[in-house]
Each structure stands twice: as structure tokens, then as C-alpha cells.
Amino acid sequence: MIYGLRALPWDRLPGRGPRFADIADLPPFRRLDGVGQTSGTPLALVGLDAPPQDADQRRARAEAVRADPCPALFGNSGSEGVVPIAYFSEFRCPYCRALERDLDTLMADYPASFRLVQHELPIFGPASELAARASVAAAKQGKQPELRRRFMRTPLVAEEASVLRVAADIGLDVDRLAKDMASAEVQEELDRTRALADVFGFIGTPGLVIGRTVLNGAIPYALLRRIVEDEAAQAAPVC
Image (cartoon, rainbow, N blue to C red; front, side):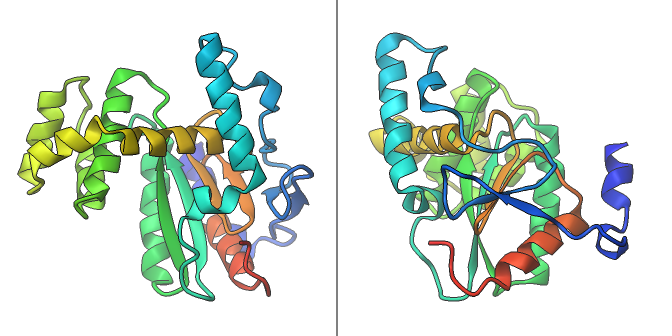
């Protein structure tokens, strides 16, 4: 049914243009109206499943991100006229695989119009956490896309040796990768992504923030294209 819905010509159906609703506590961000709720998680509820000290730290990180989300979401401001897309993914998420194919198509169709910013959001246990650390660390060697593609094509195991074998296959410096995976800098990036997920209400993956539009879950490619075209047409940048 999911693939059937994705195949519908959403861009040609009358009355199917995307409608948006402002997220009241996160200006200037908005959500796709009528497709789930994507307003942020109340900060009082953040971290209730964690030990008290960890919960306090998680709430503090979420509060800091909420005060100024753009740097954490999109990093450097990028080129004028280029719409940033923050993508939250999990290697064990089947919907992420389909969305990544759509994002690849989008970037190929509009090579100069959008900038993709990757956020790893491991939610399925140790194997996901390990792969996320490796992905963030691989970015420091300029090979994050290659490593992510390999992880998406192969089953994940919660074993560092297996991750390092994959890394060696694509030409990464495995000693540097292992050191970076255990670094405070990689942990800070994962913590920042978790804080963004708390603020924008991403309780699962995939998650997207396309300019000012917040989406949680898979959507048809035609609808994705309509949203990015609408963002590109906005007069003022989101950040």
C-alpha cells in the first residue's frame, strides 16, 4: 500500500497541493497540515526514560537548541538561494531507505538548489548506535556518503570489528575512524541531533526539515518535490 501511495500522481491531482500549519512554539517553522503532528516534544517530558542526571542534561540540550535551532539543524548558512534540508535517519529504518532514494533523485534533479545536512538518529539499540558513530566519524575523512551506502545495503551487527572491516573496504583510515568514533566531538554531534529530535518531535525516522517545513515519516516523491519547490520559492531564507 505504501508503494501504491508513493506511485500516485500527487502533483497532478486537483486540490492536492500541500497545505501547511505554523508550529506555534517554533517560528518560523511549519508542518504539513493533516499529516500527523510534528510540533516539538514538551521539554518537561524529554528524557523521562533516562536516569535523572542524563534526563536533566538532555532537557538542557533541548532548551539550548530550541532557543536557536538553525545552527544545529543546518550548520553553516551555505550559499544564498540554496534551500537547506536536514535529514534524520536510522540505519535499521526501512522507510529511510526509500526516502534516501528520493533524496538522491531530488538532488540530481535540482543540483544547485538544495543542500543536504545528514543527522544520525540511532533509536534501535547498540548496532544502530555503533553505525551512527561510524557515520559521523567517517564525515571527518570525507567518506560519510560511501560508508552510509554500504551500511544501508548490508545487515548491521553490534560489533566494531565488522564496522571497521567495511570502513577499510572503502578506503577509510580505520585507526583514525576508531579514535574519532570514541571522541567527545562525535558524542556532541549525536547529542545535538537527539536534542533537535526532541525539539521537533521526531519520535521515529525518517525526519526532514526542508527549509522551514518539518516532516516526520515517509511521503510520496511527488509531494516531496512540491514541498521543496514551495520552499525554493519563498522570498526570505529560513535562517
